Image (tube, rainbow, N blue to C red):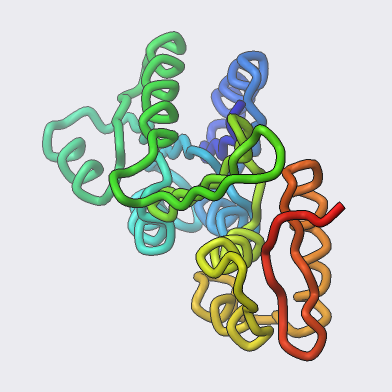
Length: 233
C-alpha cells in the first residue's frame, strides 16, 4: 500500500487516523507540528500527506507552500476547522489537492485519500521512463511524481536513491560519473550536505539490493563511474 505522513496536533485525532489508515494497509508516520513534518519530508519519501492547517511551530499553510516548492506532485489532503469559502480557496491555491473541514466522516476521508493516491499513481503524459528487464517485470520511473515501480510494485526510495536511480535509468547503457551523481544530489532539496564518495557507495549498494531479481545490474566501471545494464549471469 502507500506510505503516508499525518500532520495533526490533536493527539486523539492523529492517533485515530493513524490506526484507521494502518488498518487499511498503509504505512503511517505521525507528526505533531509543522517543524517535525518538514524534517520528515526532507528525510523520508511519502506517497501522500494528510495535513492540518492549525499547527504549532510552523503553520500548516507554511508547510504546504514549503512542500509545494520541493515536492510539487506529492498528494496533499488538507484538514482544517476553517470552513469559510475564502479559507478553502486559500488552501487550494497554496497547493492542496483536496480539502476536508472538521468534523468529518472517516469514511469520506478514506475515499478522498484513495482517490488522490490513485490519481498520483497514473503515469503522467510524457513523464515516464521505462526499461525492459531480463525478468518479466519492467522498471518504470515517473519524474513528475516522482515515483518508481518494478512491475506493479512501487519501490521505496529516499530522495538520494531516487536521484541516483533516475540518473542511471536516463543514461542506461552509459557510464554515469561520480561527479554527475554528486552534482545531482546537490540539486536535490534537502539533500545537498553530506554527499561524498563514501556515501555514494552506500547508496549504490542500497539500490542494488532494491533491484535484486529485476534482471538489472549497477556495474562499477573502475575509474569512471557506474552503469545500469542487464544482469550478466
